[in-house]
Amino acid sequence: ESIHIRCERERIVSTDGTGLQTMICPPTGAPQSVVIQFHGNAQNMYAHYQFLAWLINEGYTLATFDYRGYGESDGESDREGIYQDARSYIKHVRSRFTGTQRIFYGQSLGGAVLMRALLDEGLRSDEVYIFEGTFSSYQRVARSILARKWFLWPIQWLAYLLVTDAYSPEGDLGAFAVQQVILIHGDADPVVDFSHGEKLASLMRH
Image (spheres, rainbow, N blue to C red):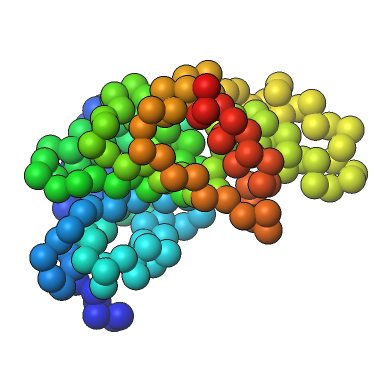
């Protein structure tokens, strides 16, 4: 509201009864499509929606939500719970926006969460999938973060011991090869190394 954007807030319930906070920001004119944001790890939807808020002036509806443990959503965050939240939100927006083109947009952690949830909910040819600065393996991204500091090199192997690839999309990404997909990644990304974007592109081609 402080930057003259009108948003509607609504609470939905995840599969286990956890309350999730959602937000829909309609455009000023007739809506063309809806962009459905799955945000990254830091902060919550009130910070992350600003990355895509410019689309509202271009005729897009922006829909976003917070995983459990984030912002005003209930519960505590854990990978299984966030995965269930993602599936619940996909069901919700598909039901809510039946007559509008849906563009799913996953950023960083949200991209990995979104990919797995979409694969299990079912991909659709009438949807567009955009993944920005994301990864396909939790273990590999943890290892790459440890590798950034020379004094952590000797313990890179801990990434495979302490971090699991449960609910990782890797292994099933070939299903995206026949879908409408846009991958966005920059070689100056300070969080998720560019190599993860290259790996993702390779896996989606097969």
